[in-house]
Length: 241
Ligand code: C5P
Image (cartoon, rainbow, N blue to C red):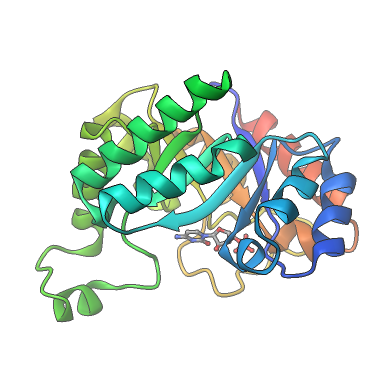
């Protein structure tokens, strides 16, 4: 089993909380995920401050607009040098291709590595009946697999997926496709409640199924000792291999 990275989701609007956690977790985690909640509050400067802790950055902006606008947004955040950046696959093949081309051109212009673009497929907040109301006759799982195929075709590096789709995506898209997985709950230890996550897996199970990276938020950030909680997850993944 290849190395599986652990990204901690810093879902907060509070800058000092995010910066403090980044410093504390730096010895244990593989990277940090910051999303719209933080970006809308603190913008690129706030992101750069957290990135200053030196860890790879997963910028979860879930971009979704016409191709020209998404390409422009990708160029705008290129200076932050995220390792991962998300776009919605529902934006279509042309939008995803425009995002990839913009990422590659802008990175080449700056002499840095381009971000790995990840496609967001079906939000886990949408179930089969909600999709049907939108006119999608496929099940959520079928739609996830279909949209992941479009992401691959557009040249994205990979997708975000629930633990339940890892194995199917890995066998369909091969070893190099990035499968980044939230909904992870440690087998033991503090802070392992499911919270509002409906479809969960342990770090070991997700790693065995073929995940590239795991995204864990509250089981780390709300633990009495976040560094110890992160280390326990890293150990759990290592023991699974
Ligand atoms: O706290 P928790 O471990 O549930 O956080 C998981 C992170 O992954 C959050 O940032 C959440 O927004 C994100 N996420 C998710 N489920 C998805 C996509 C993203 O939980 N389907």
